[in-house]
Image 1 (cartoon, rainbow, N blue to C red):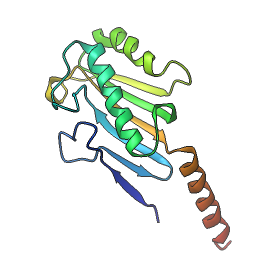
Image 2 (cartoon, one colour):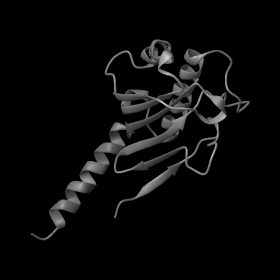
Image 3 (tube, rainbow, N blue to C red):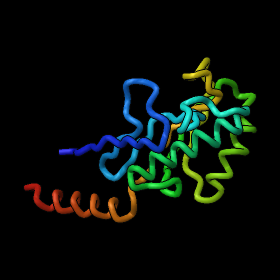
Image 4 (cartoon, one colour):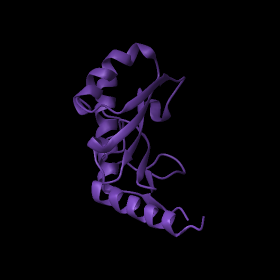
Length: 148
């Protein structure tokens, strides 16, 4: 049976709809799309796409930490932009957080985002090394118990 854990943290902005901030399952953390919302005011940060990108990644990090992970464990991101004209500016901010061991990434332009944000970023990360090792051990044990 696959177990899943809902991740929620008061240190990050709350979800702006009927969904979880993140779900932890099978050694992975699935972080819902994060906007450039200030966790204290729940309003978009001032500035352009670079400021929105920085804040969205910082919010992602807050959720990951609540799940026992961090940005260095991210394996994939999906970035949504309101226009591809923001691509270079988003990349400048993005690479400040992912300067080595870059995760896989998809970037798409969309017609609009919640709260009129210029960017939204979702991430998939590995759990902490210790948690991931325990998941692998549990799966290996279950595999050995299955009849041939």
